[in-house]
Length: 92
Image (tube, rainbow, N blue to C red; front, top):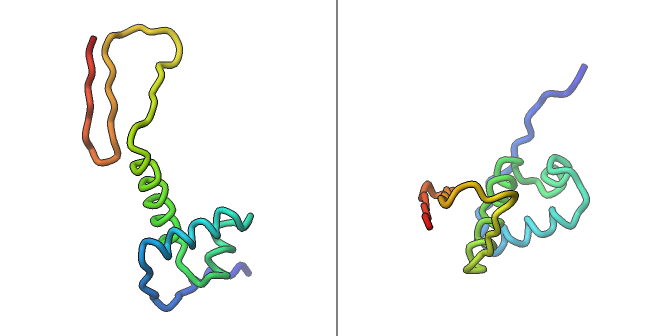
């Protein structure tokens, strides 16, 4: 019979810098998310959330991002929708 139990870990409060370190260790570990979380005794949902937040912070800290159109240009209208919900529309 398959073990379907959910592992519970004591809640540890970490600062953003500590989570950045945890995410970097995970990315360099070569382990699956599940195995890394089991070894580090952190929840899978916390690692997933902080991985996303760290990635978003790295993108926004770079300032500008170069965008290039792909394929044939068919419209003079460009629309960008950000994860914050902001929509940027640009026309020629």
